[in-house]
Each structure stands twice: as C-alpha cells, then as structure tokens.
Image (cartoon, rainbow, N blue to C red):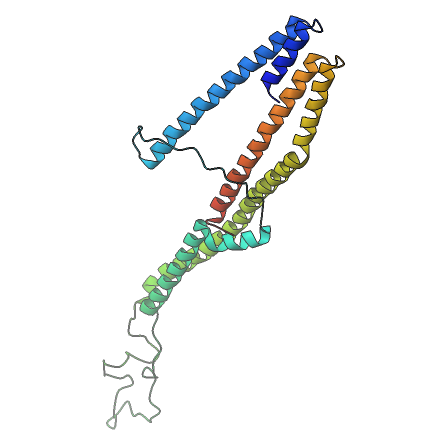
Length: 275
C-alpha cells in the first residue's frame, strides 16, 4: 500500500461526502514530503559515488554501478573461537610478538659477546706438582702461553663487566614487552567482545523485524485502511499506521545494513577473515 492508494481513498470519500477536504490535503502533504525525502536520498547516493571514486582514484566522469543486492549473513561463530583467531591474526599482537623474538635474539647475541664462553678446562691449573720458587723452579704459577686463557677462571675479555648493565636493561625491556603482550591480549578480548555483541544484537533485531514486527505493522495498516473505508477509523489513524509501516520497513533495511557494518568491524578487530 502506498500514498497513491491513500490519496484515492481520501478522494473517493470526499466525493461521496463522507469526509472533508482536510484528509485529501493531509495525504498530499505526506506524499510531497516522501517525494522530497526520496530526492534527498538520491543526492546522497551521488555523494557516495564521488567518495568511491576518490578512494579508487578514478576520474569523476567514471560511472559507478548500482550495488549488488547481498543477502545479509546471519551466521555468527562462537566468541571464544573468534578470540583465539584474533590472538593469531591481530596485527598489534603480531608486532609485539616479533619484537619479543627480536629482543631475545639481541640478548643471546649480547651474552655471547659479553660473557665468557664455555671452555675445555684450559683456564684451570694442571694437576702437576710445581716448584715455583728457588733454584729448582720449573715453571711459573700461571701459563705464559697467550694462546690459552690468561689464568685460572679469568676470561679472555677481562672488561666484560662494562657491558653488563646493557644486558640487564635489555632483559628488562624483554619483560616489559611480555607484559605489553599480556595487556594487548586482554584488550583484544574486550574489543572482540564488544564487536561480537554488536553483531549478535543486529542479527537478533533483524530477525525480529523480519519475522514479526513487519507483518504486525502491515496487519495494523490493513485494518486501519478497511476501517477508514467503512467510516469507523479516523484518517489520522490511517496516516499513523501507514507511516509506522513505512518506518518499520526502512528500519528492517537499516538492520540488514548494520549487520554488514558490524561484521566488517569484527573482521577488522580480528585482523582478517575468521570464518
């Protein structure tokens, strides 16, 4: 049922003297407002087409086709599975994980350069009796062979302690990165929960509108229209019923649009497709 049908009803009743001219005027006012709103939507569509050309870096003369009708996807995965996928795919978490791996490699490299490496007991005394003093001295207490180590338990790099503070600082940075990773995972869980809630809400509302509310609004409009024809319902009630039915149908389409928006936001939060 459209405004033309209401207008015809009002004209018929006005011609038969069953109503006044005010009902006809009300229908015409509503009709003009709807026509103006439709024109506004068409102009908004043109602005969106210019926005699409801007994003695609296309000349303004390139035509943009009408969007392909897509049936709203009303399926939704378990939130725990989505969170697990987000821990793997989310870019922010991957960056922190890569920094942790990098920091571990830096620590391993620093330790190999700063601390003495494992040896084969060259830095210990030989298990031999040594006469180190007197006329019968055979060899000195410490090895004079510089190809070996410099003494008992002393590393080749005697100044390794100078860089020990750098190593401690790097280890502290590694601990901080691990703490940041734990916080980022907690934040990811919260973001996924919010995005999942919005998608679930939009799906439930769209199903409610489609299965019940639209049909109820249509029934109310039909009853009001028949009652107006028989003179038992005021024309203002018919107008209200019609506007309610129209707004509910628009809301249903908006709910379908919201499903797509919420799903795209969930995919963005996860860091990629999760299904």
